[in-house]
Image (cartoon, rainbow, N blue to C red; front, side):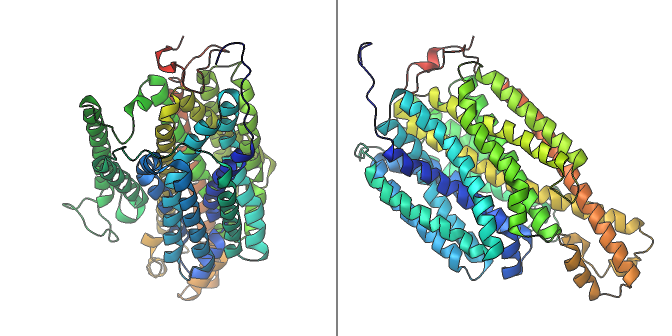
Length: 544
């Protein structure tokens, strides 16, 4: 295009379907914590079993998204996009009629497999349908769509779960999936390229790495941090399999990069182009993306856990408690793009992680069993500002640094990182909080004179989980506890839960503070010097 030609504008109608596809995935994931109380009651399982569904979704997406990107390039993005949206609708139907928690986990595995193709297809289809400023706007809208999905899940989903039931929450998932399928006929895409070779060896390696990593992190509490506990399926010379799986996953991830580099050097097409990781700024954006999504997932699991399980309140109460955070994320994700011409990514990134660190420390000090206090709301709002700015920023850095032909690879990296981070964040939150709670309860019980060892022995402290006061009283009713001892146990449990929450928030704050290091490696483009969205030679432009 010459300098005198006016840019060709494309209808925004196709983008509506892509926007809703991002909302679909975000709503589905955010709806699970909202429904945690209903599932626990319906299926009579601990809340950590419900978190397994969240972990399963993220694990499947992360394990398959790179393979999904290549399938999209080979078959054609629009055709494969429509097919997987149908599968997502099937997963919603499975959620609605699930007779047991195992079916919920299966449904989320289906949804994850679908999202493994939807995630890279969003970036690829935007690149094929929009150019220039329109493409930049479309890319930015995915961040606000993600936030909107979370807000919708907590507001609409929370209301439905309270007034009707948790199953009805996923009727909206089905409705959105149908709408996305209909709108997909407005999309245009290049035909697939059957000559594209898919590196199934690399897909197997990275898939296995992600599965091992996630399983290891998710079972640190149940199998043992170092020494194998009684719940571990096996042990290696007394060691827990959980850390062994984590190490094995890290080793396989390194083998994946070596494998991909060798294929590139020999002229073969890798599963994902390593040029996506080509500069320090891009690698920093990937690290930052992992950390910010992991923190968000941990908070989105922790708050509903306390409100619905510990306090025994409704999903709608959860929605109200999370509303300041989710609305702030949504508004910030929309408005932060206005800062890109004034501040470099490095400045915005470091400021964002600074805000999340301060807010998490603040929350660890002021939080009580009542999430609606003004200090707590202010902490959630501050965290939301940092979170919303970071999620949009790091994705924008990745997209702007890569040419159009790598859009699918950028989308697959984004999907792998975000969903692995979501799974790990949820798993770590569950394992960390339950682990701290177990230690707190065991220590307090041993020192509590009103709780004799004979009574403590009747309650399995090795399986301590988050329960409401009413549920704890029911459990103690089946023991020899006197009314005074029951009251003492309930008080001990309340104190242990709150201390577990505060310490967990401090751990997240430490993680957020560490994230300032990769944020300091983000690009320092001067205002107005942001790389061209359509794929100008961004990689040759060194940070100033």
